[in-house]
Length: 88
Image (cartoon, helix red, strand yellow):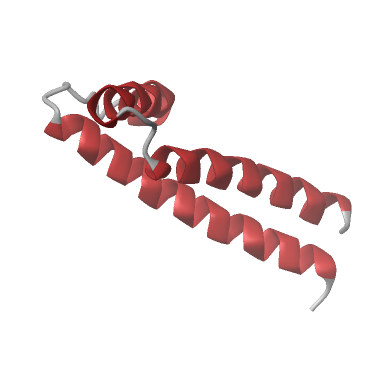
């Protein structure tokens, strides 16, 4: 296995983490009686993530770690995919 395959595999893992954390964020926002548009969810996920950030900050006084996992996973998937493609 070469290094580009490793980075592309890491990108897939990061995408899986991103999808799971996105679903968890939508679930948490929905619990707080905010209407979710499931038809346009792929476009509105950024809006819902920032709503989650503001809601958690208002409730607990700090941003919950789920938001940071979401941010890190989307950035890691992008970086790993680019590195895998460049090193190919």
